[in-house]
Length: 260
Length: 303
Image (cartoon, rainbow over the protein chains, first blue to last red):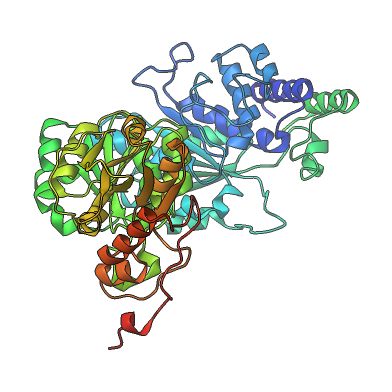
């Protein structure tokens, strides 16, 4: 694990421990994909509504805790604020609310919605001749939804080269509808597709910087719970479970022992 | 629409490959702002929400049931919860495509959309009402559903967004509350009866003040859709009678007049029902009226 990806996971663990909420395995699989997107995006944590900013949409909203942790690490808000995760009247719900959380551009939770909204945002920028870009992070479970593929078809048809889909291929669907070859499918839909190790920031960033004349898809091969072997091995059990004080100590220890 | 687009560069059309030929002047004048995205209603709504998030004012257009009942969640979340205001303008109201059967009938659209927070619902009954209401509300900053029909009621009265109209006030003991094109069948039905008629071109927000003025009368909702009866019941103090859609799929085909007759929304049947209310024999609030038998020989057309 690259050093930059550890603090976000540590914060997510702490907030899950404090709040008793959160989808840890899913949150852990997106950390490098989200950090890499922000590494190439034009954005200013001090001015979340800067008109020239690029946009990031977390379509798989249940990974909110991981996303908040990334945004906190980037400076959008203090890390301690996220400890209110899921609490009554908290800014930080278990799915992100764009009216509450600085940096959140679309409120997502039900799967298969954010990608269509992101396509519309990119289409708006294309119509204006703007150079702004839109990044949308979707999951492989989410790609069971037909609306994902509708949006991909429309985006490819419109040759939205300013739209990048980050595909979190964390194999969450091993017990039901798997999509074993997502890169081929996106390519068949007309996207410019690259497949990388979804926990290797330099590889993801290189893929994001590739020029493309249509929708770009970066399929990240990821691991649910990446960073803590206990989460990786038992991701179904941990889907929406928060650690007890004892387990928290174990997970922190695992996280700091992890090397890429 | 071309006129609006001339004066407001935020206007874009998001189409589901319906009515395209009708918009040739627009497509010629503003080809880039005419987005015929394909037959993918869920995505029409989501993409329009994304366009709205960046300052555009999208008009999503296709056939009513497909872009409302099919993608209720996209309207609820991408548009409503996210606060990305769009306009949804539909054709194919209720039984407009009678010959196509239940797959093309919009029966739950208004009833379902009225339950979503913050969404305006407009049901104009004529071309003039449509023109007036769209110009008034297209840039309201609030999502608006404009439910159009190609069977106008033909009556003429000035409408205002959010206000109902008193179409007939004879000081009668019964008041019919109606909306949209079915007014065409209501007016002849009550012609010889001591019945007042209120007409709502906006279903939500609901003009409660107007209804209150007739609270002392017995209310009868006549509507060839869902939603108005529920609005009236929520605001009425007393019992309300419903003359509306049956609790069954209507698969008799034919013309809109055939289907309206089949379900008892023709003038003669409305007259009988309202007369029964006048005589105090009608059913009470919320109880669906018994409809004529499904597929009776008189209404089954065999080629």
